[in-house]
Structure formats: structure tokens, C-alpha cells
Length: 424
Image (cartoon, rainbow, N blue to C red):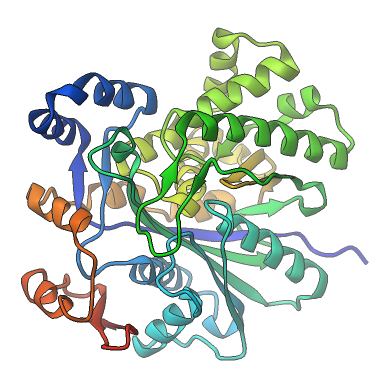
């Protein structure tokens, strides 16, 4: 008997409310150092970034992931929390060098009254921005091969992207999380797991040394690594799927790539389309416009880099746009997901929109996610950049920056460094 399809049942997103407009940020940096004006304006032009979210004092990887999972559980009351067999987190900005962030999330949601079971597996996956996707593929394969009817899993992605500031990389920061509900016979997207393509190399395009909150990136080299890994993983996918790369590209109705900044996937797709379809820049633009490619990129331009969650930010906004265009023809449409993790690995997987995809997407309220933000004083942004939280300074930080009512928060840093969380 054939195994049932497995894939995404639903997804939700969570963002910090703090927002900073990048034009105003760049203007301030130029006032501080006029010598970097040309570099910063070039950075805005080449990345396409316009604004970004950044965390408040009481927010971190765990609180953002918890908000995303809470939103998922609240949205899918038809799915019993007790059905979860896995609760995983993909992140490259972990809060603990030993304990999985998903374990913190498990306890926090349980204390908040959610009936999350203890007979599940909780773990964390790290491979730069690909960690969440690698967890998704691993768990989906398990459910396909060894799951039982009714089994589900939650894959969380959560990150806070930090770079040296001031610098040209400062405009590619951001923060946010996603929660992916994985199930047999999914409502949203059925994944073609046997056709998954991979590429991996040992490179130093991007890394974060132990003890550092700031990532190190070699921008041009990292872009080249992204392009090469996408080409390799896509060709591996085509080989495993027994289809020519050109035919495969033509068959896909929507493409969703890792989006560290809005324009990065554009150049990657241009190279792929040139290689396999012989399209020049104008031809590639027409090809991608016909598939609504830019809709998933604009969200990143306004929100920033979510690292492990950037693919799923693009997927949510892109699918919402495509569903409006496809309408009743949405089920059966073919999509491609490409997830890149620096250092590096690339995974390429295709899927078909599920029979209930249109109903699922219609429940999303992405406009509210975009508008639920504030532009705090610049000093709050600078506090985020300058402050390393310690058991000694955190009580004062908490007193001057209390958590938002009703949101999960880091409530205490114990003297031994352990983090305690609550819902205030």
C-alpha cells in the first residue's frame, strides 16, 4: 500500500513589534560618519531592504518561537495538541549551548495552559538558515515512513539576525519566527520527499564564532556560494526526479527561496534560468513575474532577515498572493522550495498544493502581521545593539522595558545563567 502524502498542514508567523525604517537608519549613520554615505546607499539599492523588525528587551529566540506556536495552536483548534509527536526548532541564534530551544518552548506553552504532550521528541537543528527546513524534511520523512494516522509535528524556526553596526550589513538584520504544522494528508502542501535535492560544502562564507552575538559574513562570496549550491541541489533534484532541468523549471507554478534580503533570490533565479532555459535578464523577469515571484520578496523587504524563517515568510506571503490569482485552481499547483544554510548546505524540494489549500490560506491574516508594529525611539534600537543581557543588568533592563501584556517574555536570568520565561 502506498504511503499517504505528507507535508505542510498549516503555518503561522510571529514578529517583534519593534520596527525601524532603513532610510532613517541610514540617514542617522551618515550623520555620524559622512564617509560611509556611498556604501550605505549602495547597500539599500543592492539588497532592496526598506525596514526591519528587531526584538524588545524581553524577546529572544524562545519567546518568538513560542508566539508562533501559540498562533498555530489557536488557529488549528481542529488539531489536538496531544497528536504532536515532534516539537523541533531550527535556529542559528540559540539561547543555550546544550538545551534545545524547543524544550523551553514546550514548558512555556504548557505553563500557559496548552495541552502539549510529553510523549513527543523535542530537539533542535542547526545549519545556519537551513535548520528549519532540514527538520521539516526529516520529520516529514518519519511521518511518511513510520507515522500513524493522526500523528502531527510542529517545526519551529526562530532567529534574531545581528551584524556589525554601523556597517553595510546592518540593513540586512531582522527577527521573527514561524511555526509549521506537519501531517499526513496535509491541508496546505504535499511534499515530494523522494525527489529532494541536496548540495553541501565546507566553506566560510558566513559564521558566528562561539560567544559572539554578531555574525561574520563575506557578502560577495556568500552570494556566489548561494548561487552554486542552488544550481547543484536543483540538478540533484532533477536527477532524482528523472526530469530535465529545463522541463522541471517550466512545470513549476511558483518558486520560493531563502530570502536573507529581498533581491538575493532574484539573482540566483536569473542564473538558474539562464543556464537551463537560456533566458536573459528580461526573459527571466517575465518568467518570474508570471509566477508571482516578487510577492514573497516584498515581505522580507519590509520585515528583514529571519534566517531560518526567511523561506517561510516568503512562502506565506507568496502563497497568499498566488491563491488570489489561482483561485479554485490552487489545488494541484506545483511549487518549489529552496533552503540555503551558509557554511553550507542547500535543499531543494517540490510539492503540490493540497485539496484544502485555498481554505487554509484564506484563514491567514497577513495584513495584521504587517501592520502590528511600532517605531520606537532610536535609542531602543541602539540598546538592542549595545546590550548583552546578564544576570546583573537584566533586572534593570526589565524595569525600564517591561514586556507587552499578553506576550511571552524572558522574565529572569538566574545567577547561573539559566533563562526563565513566562506569560505576563
